[in-house]
Length: 260
Ligand code: ZN
Image 1 (cartoon, rainbow, N blue to C red):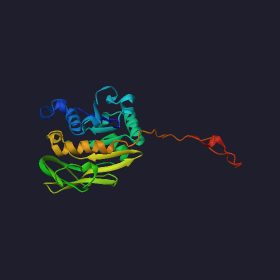
Image 2 (cartoon, rainbow, N blue to C red):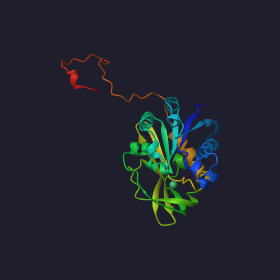
Image 3 (cartoon, rainbow, N blue to C red):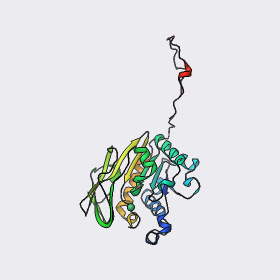
Image 4 (cartoon, helix red, strand yellow):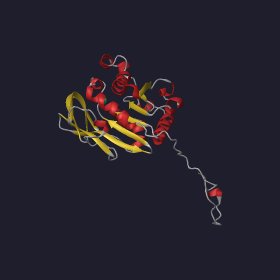
């Protein structure tokens, strides 16, 4: 059996401490519910830890990052408090092959905007309306095991187009909302060696992470985003002064012009 996927569920963890409605839904924090969802589906195939914003280094020490195969990210009101040096380190890990699953309001996180390179802005409305997530990629590993070609969330916050993202490499879901909008709600990209999945559901005042289909998609995404190889990738720009075979050229290089 292959090694378990090492998952870090990262959560800003502010609303659940400060807002009574959110606290009632998620008394131990949304991260504990996400962790349970991933474990429920993947069992011994995963080892899941959690990390939160207010821990030292946001819970993302070099040791944690080096031992994470897939990270999930939920943030909303405190994106600006995430330290840039930690964002740099997460970006490097994604380029090396760590999977990243960005959830709901994480569309405005520093790490998501950094990796995608666009504003990641969208339209929104919080009126508890109905949402249908249509599976537009049957057979994709992220949609595996869903009962139907679509699933519904009875009460959600609306996210609408235009969603300012690079065209996804693959798309798993499109959402329809009761108020008329649509939204690209399950999107895949690759950056460097790393796989990235954005999944829309997850507004904190609705019990979204208890929904069985949302839980299934979260676990599927973890499995999909896990790196297929742990082979180290060199991402600096080394000068190879000793070639594998002799080179006959007499070209002289002024090394002072090269500052890699
Ligand atoms: Zn929200």
